[in-house]
Image (cartoon, rainbow, N blue to C red):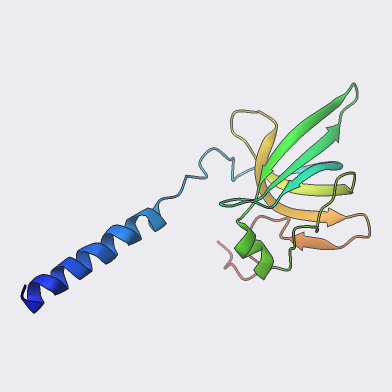
Length: 133
């Protein structure tokens, strides 16, 4: 086998491995033009790959609704100071989300405000260093 053939085979192998890393679902299911603030108690905090989840019980006038809030993956969250026990069941929080377009109880995480006023994330939905349009 010549070096040229070996090099082409190596490049093809690297490219084949890189393509799945690029595959990711779209965030088109969330309405990025809307921000909703939810107030409730944590039912569950799922520290899982590829995305972490907050399951939040939100009280309404008549009953309680469960919301599923999609977050970044654990590695990215850890870089922002999150740990698996940042949220615990029964914890009262406020969460800012981009809601689902279909009106169901779910959304894309933007920020959480704890009972003591501490905020993690960005409730405005834009990075703090993003340029103004």
